[in-house]
Amino acid sequence: MLDILPINAFTYSAQPYIIAGPCSAESEQQLLTTAEALAAFGVSVFRAGLWKPRTRPGTFGGVGSDGLAWMKEVKRRTHMRVATEVACPEHVEQALSAGIDILWIGARTTANPFAVQEIADALRGYDIPVMVKNPVNPDIDLWIGAMQRLNLAGIRRIAAVHRGFSLYSRSTYRNDPQWHIPIELRRRYPSLPIFCDPSHIGGRRALIQSLAQQALDLRFDGLMVECHISPETAKSDAAQQITPDELDGILSRLTLRSDAPAGDEMLHDLRRQIDALDTALLELLSKRMEISKEIGIYKKQHNMPVLQTERYNEIIARLVSRCADAGLDPDFIKKIFEIIHAHSVDNQLKL
Image (cartoon, rainbow, N blue to C red; front, side, top):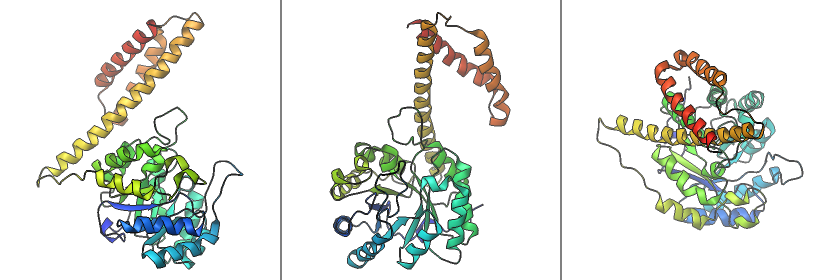
């Protein structure tokens, strides 16, 4: 369980709640210019990464604690709340001492229970909002576990941030949204504030608008968007950052769905979930057919028959054996995979 405060206690006042700012703090002037532009159209929470966990050594790893003074100046000049990522107790201590208003835990850190526990221990006794990004791998229990560790340390102002999940296969997105996972998180914890990070999901600025709209259609509470005063010169994640003016334009085009009449809201929520899951199913089926085609090419190159009955029987037996645990009718699953298998065979025969 999670003992948390609802979204209206999380330090915000408008919907959707917008957190915006550059991926990385690079200079005081960059932060101030970006923050002042964001504050001009009502963004009240400014984000910037000071300590940047990077995939490869030798790339820009952030300015570190030197940026804390810049964040304080942002607060003084714009009256915005400021937020940054922490990945260890030392980051927590320095951020708290500098008056950072909101902390977030990144996807790589969320995946490490030892690191999360150290952060939770460092936060014990403090009352500060903490946002937890989903782990890089699609594991909802690992995500929940990170929030539970914070909760057990006394943190009650907790929010989840959906930033998508890493895939080895090629995808439209930098990180696959897998909307069913935050949907399940909302089902388990209805009062948990959930934000969407369309910048990290999309990986390209052109995708931010549509992803943000999908998140709002799924009744996410807010957005965390990467904004840079000059994205093309950014030292990290340049392709997914937008200017403050571009963010203002995106926000003006978002549609906030009106509440349904009393008694219909549950039905509308369920239908939105169905729509998201149907989209996810289409994407999964497309990927499955692509792999099936690759198998067909391999069979043709190695003079193998298209139809391999033993393999098909193994697939059906494996899936049927899992139906009881999944709460599914075996006959229903057999019918679905008969159609999928037939279509796969047909595609391979056409090669």
